Length: 109
Image 1 (cartoon, rainbow, N blue to C red):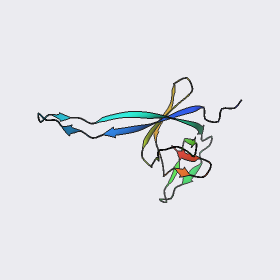
Image 2: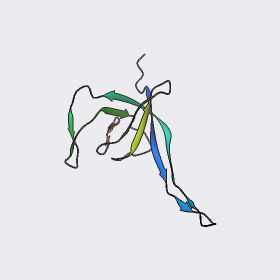
Image 3: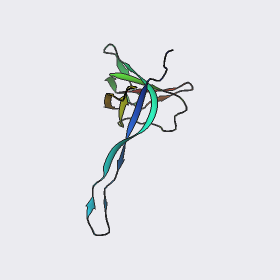
Image 4: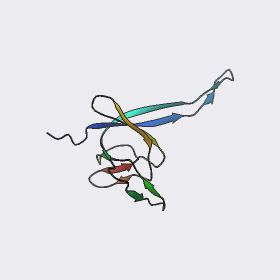
């Protein structure tokens, strides 16, 4: 049987640094969270995509997500995609705003 979403997407969450009660600066953190089922499809040829901001970009992968995801992604956010065995396939920023449609979402990286 074909697995519709064989990959796992994680997204980067950044926390700001702060000053503690003693006046010491505590640096912010960066971590990847979430385990969102997805399908990462490589761009087999150098196809340019025109985004809504008027910029064109040759993307390397299209990430397909289900339509019921609870988080919204935006251009510039860093994501990671893993295969079913936990091996990292890619780590890239999102290019252009993702497309959210009735049957699913598309992210271009």
